Amino acid sequence: FMTRMDECYAEQVENLVVMPSADGKRVAAEFNIQGTYLKTDKGLPEARGQKYFIRVGAFFDVKEGKIARVTNYYNLPGWIQAVK
Image 1 (cartoon, rainbow, N blue to C red):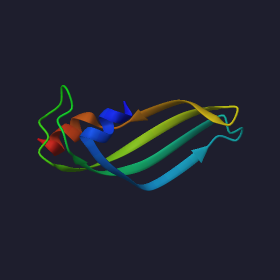
Image 2 (image 1 turned 30 degrees about the vertical axis):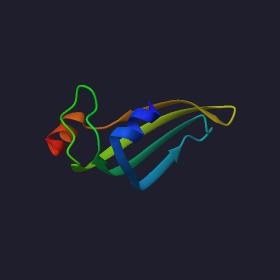
Image 3 (image 1 turned 120 degrees about the vertical axis):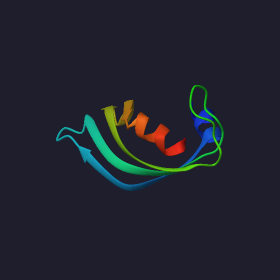
Image 4 (image 1 turned 60 degrees about the vertical axis):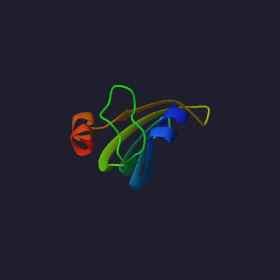
C-alpha cells in the first residue's frame, strides 16, 4: 500500500487536529492534504501532475500503546473532480 501511495501521490498533511478518547483507546484526527497526483493509480483518472486539496478524517484504535487499526474517510468523488 505505502509503495503504491509513494509512487502515485506526493502529499503533505496540514492543519492536523488530534482528538483522543478519555481512555486513550481510540483517537480521531482531522486534517487537510495538499497533494500532487504523480502516477495513474489503477481504476482512477489519468495522472498528469494535478494538484489537489482534500479534507480527511482518520480514526484509530490503540492497543498496548500501538495503533491497531486506522480508518480514513475523504470525499473520493470530490478528489476525482479535482484531478480530471
